[in-house]
Amino acid sequence: MAPYLLKAGGLFYKNLKRLRVEQRTLARRYKKGVKIAEQSKGYHKQRLRVAKLHEKISNQRNDFLHKVSTKLVSQYDSIIVEDLNVKGMLKNDKLSKAIGDVSWTKFNTFLQYKCECYGKNYIQIGRFEPSSKMCNHCGHINKELKLKDRVWTCQECQRTNDRDFNGALNIKSFGLGTPPKIHNVSR
Ligand SMILES: [Zn+2]
Picture 1 (tube, rainbow, N blue to C red):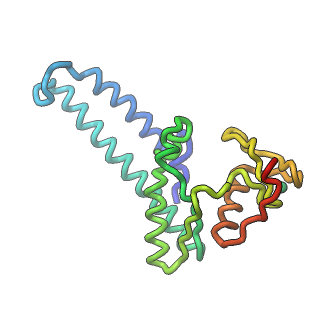
Picture 2: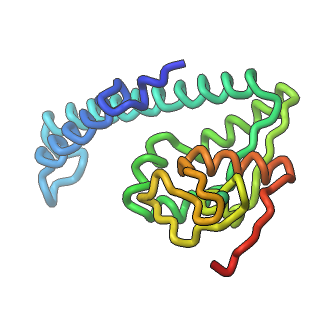
Picture 3: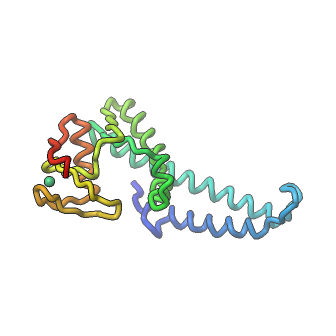
């Protein structure tokens, strides 16, 4: 396990930051109107450096995804995931970095085939199940919930819900076919 890879300031993000710097240097060395083959020696040297860094980052990302998916599949009998609209989410600036950086689609692919290999259950719930907005305790749907709301109090049962934890409980409920009873949907 290498969760430190995904922490801000961790090795992975350090390399991402370095990549941006190296790419800027590359752009500076690029002479407009000159064919790639005829660019300067310095440009080609930098191009190689950027390519190597790209490969390093890609390997680190794959390593991380493999370690986490193997650990999850060996630890649990069933894995339930939300069918996120990744393309739609990538259009959202704030989400795109987080999701793009951890390659959500690839991670799901790893989980799925490893579940098959180890004889575990891989369950995907529908994209339109209200996983975040529904209170897992009483089934009330909080239509006012915004992406920035990390913690919210249910108007119906007064329970304080952590956005991600409540969402995860709902994904589990839907995946196992026991969603919380929806009521007061008109609110
Ligand atoms: Zn509630």
